[in-house]
Image (cartoon, rainbow, N blue to C red):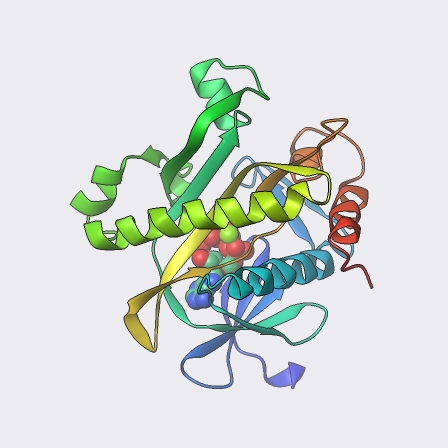
Length: 240
Ligand SMILES: Nc1ncnc2c1ncn2[C@@H]1O[C@H](COP(=O)(O)OP(=O)(O)OP(=O)(O)O)[C@@H](O)[C@H]1O
Ligand SMILES: [Mg+2]
């Protein structure tokens, strides 16, 4: 099978491979970690395997909560079968606690709790460093309709609620996360959660120590990234 694989897209952390039929794709998780728009890049042996496991686990958990996603099943260590989408070119960020770019931009202290979850939109365009945009930009430029954005906001807040619950039971605080949504190729009216949810795309802090268990370990050289990701997998009970 591997000799016949058609790579449709080489991303920074994943590849998209032609699926078994026209409405599906295979998402392959690589070991690459990148930060600061590829200015920093490193391989972590086994990271793709962990992210595949963690993302599959989270998508399955969200499915049990009736959150529709592109996820069909995990095929092997590195690959998932997913439903093909037309990806909306926006990174949807939900924040519970101040960290990362928002701390820098607004001069706020990392770790400050927000009064309510904050939804942000970033235009997915590496050449422009994924600029922050408003809800109005999304609609005015036709990246999504007002009704799609309304659905997505609602889904993002639901996902936030479920993920916060999932992680806090494991002693982990969900600080923020970035997700993507798409229109199903088989039914473009249907908006689903796509891409991945993993320590690459979430900020996860140990509840007791505030120790970072996510990609900030790599961004900020805070120690072993693999140990952090293994800790997340092990707390979720999915280490093999
Ligand atoms: N269900 C899906 N159907 C089609 N494309 C998808 C689906 N889920 C995720 N993708 C896309 O597949 C790619 C996954 O690769 P990766 O995340 O490594 O890309 P990337 O380098 O981050 O680039 P991008 O800026 O496009 O996200 C992304 O472009 C993502 O938007
Ligand atoms: Mg990506």
